[in-house]
Image 1: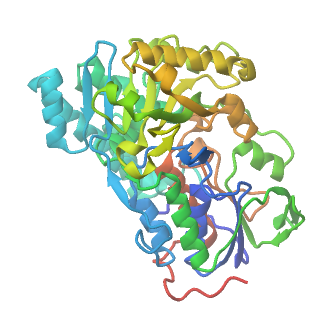
Image 2: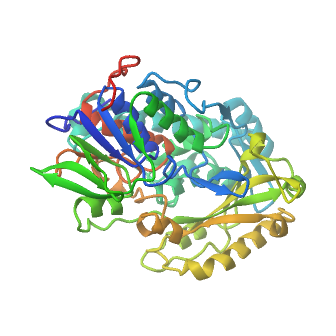
Length: 525
């Protein structure tokens, strides 16, 4: 549902999209589906953006997003040009993760997080008792209410101002429903009202970190993320998350779109209040009637205005270790799981440490970690290394961004990596210190080198003044034919939301999108 009415005025036949991340790919597919001539420019040698890839010795591993929810949004983007999961190269073959997450706690207890309500009731009953299982069902219903009241108007919709949210009858109705459900209270408080077990409370609130806010301070509207994670299901594509971008890129080029990889945009030429031409480092020039910008906001601002925008609060960052571990080592860690959230004993304190402002941030003193083992779901990702079978392994540790804690990561990375491995060894991941061969480490410094504000891959935090109508608008006034997409603009951070942001950007250029021109697309010149 499109609440906002503003679109790019004038001709929009030729569109250049900068950035072939999921937002740019989504925008390009939806635009191409309307018959426009679309050129997609990407500085890396592969599509994907934050759904990135690291090429290790003899293997590849996702070094960006690892959690896929609402895959129907990918299907919708492909359908805009008449493609589907089976028709692309590579095809998208999705596996539903069961459980979606395995949660481990400091007291050695575990909870498997199931999307199926009956399985989850049985699991909560096993761990917490039947009374808590009944409370879980109440929480599940509340999360669904938040999501249903929020999605159509506040996520999957363009809006131009606060007035849009009260002048539209449906928007006003959804706003009233969201208010009645307590959506503008605090997420932590709303969850605590419904369930009592502190372990379950963590399972249903840690998602606030995706939005860059501690659960105790996050608006309850971000229960929508928990609903996606814990009720709608988590999927994984064969070959890794990168196959999503590869499949979308294939559908785009098959439909006549032009994709230029390893092409860095260096300048936007303007005249008459509009962007007219995009120039790249290799000397190429691309004429445009409309322009979609998806890079991180500091890069966008540099290319468009050359002056700093209003300071924004940026989300905490992360250190992510990527490598392989022998299966003989990981076999001793118990039942294998694709995603394990290994919670430390501390909770509120760790959020305070990584989210502190103005140089007061600290590394987590008792870290909670996300451990990803994709070969558990896709054995095709196993490799032979040093004469033995190994599996890819990623370990993510949330940490302060560079505004919060301007650490010298060139000095700190080695010591902090050793500390994380020591913590994991002590939590039962026996042999990880010796067996884990780490090939790549992302830190706030590596994110910053890719143009991400304050060295965070999670973009501006979703605090109130950076949420919804207060977030950076996706349709600029100057230049008048430039539209933004990606995690820095509406609706925000996350795989589903950036896919939606690409579609919303296309709507700003085309108006309401139809069902696409499958089989009727003219060639791109």
